[in-house]
Amino acid sequence: MDTIFAPWRSAYIRGGKPAGCVLCKDAARGDDLVLCEGKSGYVMVNRYPYTGGHLMIVPFRHLSRLSDLLPAEREELFAFMDLSVRVLTEAMKPEGFNLGMNLGKAAGAGIDDHLHIHVVPRWGGDTNFMSVIGEVRVIPEDVSGTARELRPFFTKFQREVCG
Image 1: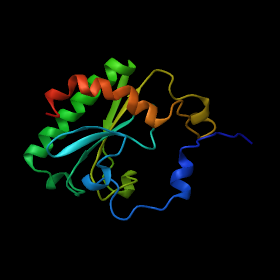
Image 2: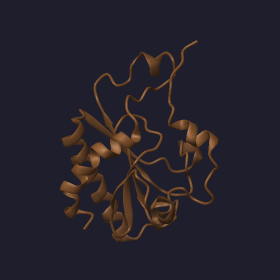
Image 3: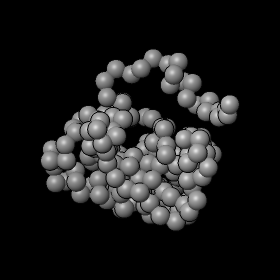
């Protein structure tokens, strides 16, 4: 039997589950994984990433349908996607990106009642035998470390989007 250690998950497993939506503005405020805030949304490191550097872009308002976004929210969320790609490109040198949303449980949304966008940096060969054969993904760094690594890059570019 293979053993993979992920000690940061123990706080999630053993800890009390938060009441309400974990992506709403008040729940995320002060989270050490939040990298940039704008007028209507924010960028954070995904607590349970697909790859190192996996970011999420989240509107402050609690909504689940694209049609509920106001024009200014749409504009800022798209600007955050551009900013995130630029930051990750400079900081982590990925060879490509997956950008997207899972709308609804049937589409794979783990949190289906609060719309959010995934920005996933990709490298050639980042799907290796562990994920293909073992159906296990190994993330080689702690997400708090990723946040510390990326924060200076967001600070460098933040005037363009975050104000």
